[in-house]
Length: 106
Image 1 (cartoon, rainbow, N blue to C red):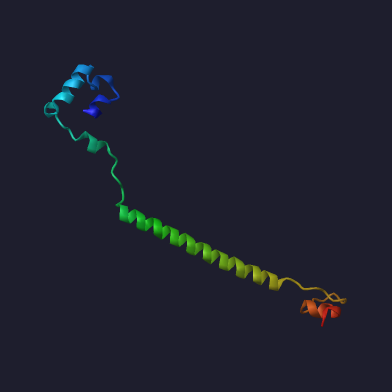
Image 2: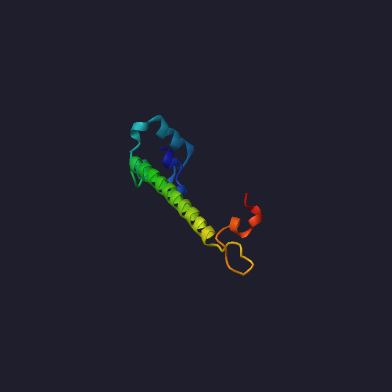
């Protein structure tokens, strides 16, 4: 009855309030068409499957972030170790910082 009263097209609604009141007073006279069930959108996936997919995507994203940070860290360490060190007076790259400046040795 409520859906019939709320129709978009005025010709599909009750013609007046008296007709609507009569339908409310005698609900057994109203024919049920199960229209409310047809108007509800059906869920595409069951709730458990949606929860499982959401958790799985979250775990996969977290694992991907951990993998990326581990590889970026390793890349940064490799880049740092491949960087040329301080140069000696002859222009050659020395083995480390301590050997480059004898004043820094203990």
